[in-house]
Amino acid sequence: MMLRTEMPTIPIDKLTQEFLRAWSWHRQGLDGNLMGEDAASVLDRVGWARSVGGANIYLTLFARAGIRREAADRLVATQEIHELPTARGCTYVLPAADFAWGLQLGGASAEASVKILLRLGVERDEIERLADSVKEVLLRAKAAGEPPMDPRELKEVLGDQVRNMGEEGKKKGATTTLPAALGLLQADGRIRRVPVNGRLDQQRYSYVAWELPATGESDEAVRSRMVERFLGWTGGATTGQIRWFTAFTVAQTKAALASIGAVDVKTAGDDVLWMMPEDVSLMARFEMPADEDVHLLAGSDSLVLLRRNSSDAFDAAGRAAVTGMGGSALAADLSDHPIVDRGKIIGLWQYDPENERIAWWTFEPASKKVLKRIAEVQAWIGEDLGDFRSFSLDSPKSRLKNIAALDRLRSE
Image (cartoon, helix red, strand yellow):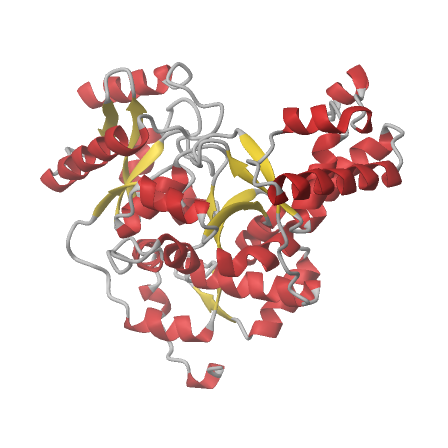
């Protein structure tokens, strides 16, 4: 590992927000350095892709490596990438090398559903017996060459072993005991859920037996690995940004940073970024690209979601342009998808499936490169996806207001 004394010193006035945006752009593979890689390699390099039933995963791969939906779906089918609950208990699409430790990282989240049932008077033994029964049913189905089973089919087979929790359970988000049992099994790698049509931009799942070996590592070691990977994906992050993504305590975060030899780098904006020493050397040699380089990304793309810092991607003109917009144009969670040039958000977009078009607006008149990229992504959505949903409950009807707003702003 490189020692602090061996690292180059980066002048603090170089580390402006503009420079750091371009640096993140580069680290996220949006400058073309991942073109031609497969989906697993992309996710390994730029970070896990948020799923939630939206199309972010597909645009993540298309923007960085030109990967089409069918190619990504094939890797899901062969388990080279997979959607799993991990950091903060949230679901991301991970490469196979990260399955076991990613599940270990998110294992505690499965206990949340169990705790609700415990408060409703269900004994833990009952939940664990149900989990064992589910596993037996899925093992028999797998041995017989039968397809994965959805929750309805499982309930039919399990009968009275699945308890209905009535109105009180419904109020607390625990209609039956089955989801908690499924959560425990998935967190241990004993089962996995698969999308019913093989696509990741929806949230209808079936379940199949799985035997994923445990890491054999301590939780402390896994936390250290998570922080090291996170710093590599982002090219540097503040303590607050690390803690938001990981949900680690202050003490856990400090211990992980110390164990991996991370170093602190102060920016021109007085932020302190934690970085891996080798990345400091790479940053010292990095030069901001002079030529326009445009992508349309999802609002949950790793560029802005990993550190939840989308507001940093607007310059002064962009901030002024979106001030007063409805929704959360400047909030951490974008209300529209961003049009980005070298890390800077220069416009917003939504997909209008009724008219098979992208509704868009840029803060300054759109260049030829912007128009070309919009046309490319519009064609890709039509050919590969049919629609571009932000999350499972997103629908053409729910985004009509945003589409109308973008059209109006563009015409003004």
